[in-house]
Image 1: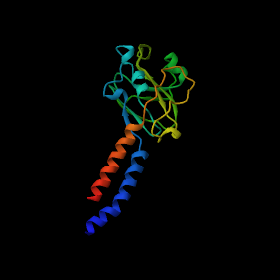
Image 2: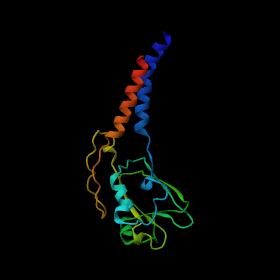
Image 3: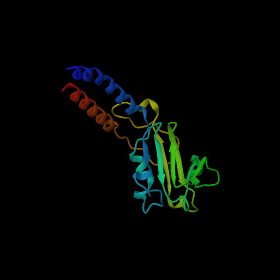
Image 4: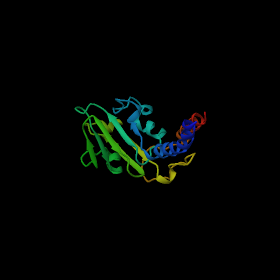
Length: 178
């Protein structure tokens, strides 16, 4: 009897804690969805921009690259350097083969390969981070237009994450009641 009363009193606290933590943490997102995706694309449809267009990036998320650090690197660059494939003035340069970049503000981020000739062959990517005000609503509107040349970002739904959190919450409540 005491265990059931304890379970009922602690369940709402756990549910609130779970909901808070599920929204407070950024995700680690593997670039291209897999190890070794940081490479010259074999076709336009294989470009990392196609992958990035389908994803929703939030403030606090981190992009993770896995690549051969002896042969390649990741450069974060300005819009102008991205467009012209200029590798001489990066905002940041990563050469370790296991790069993690935290997305700390909304807007576009421009990345390209630091290996000679790779950017010109399509090894580059634009990631658009949604603004904080769009983070927790059920269906996300398309991001506001930004001034950069690059792929259009198709709107997608943020419902999947909310649905998973709701199912876990219902599961905890059901288990706490029986």
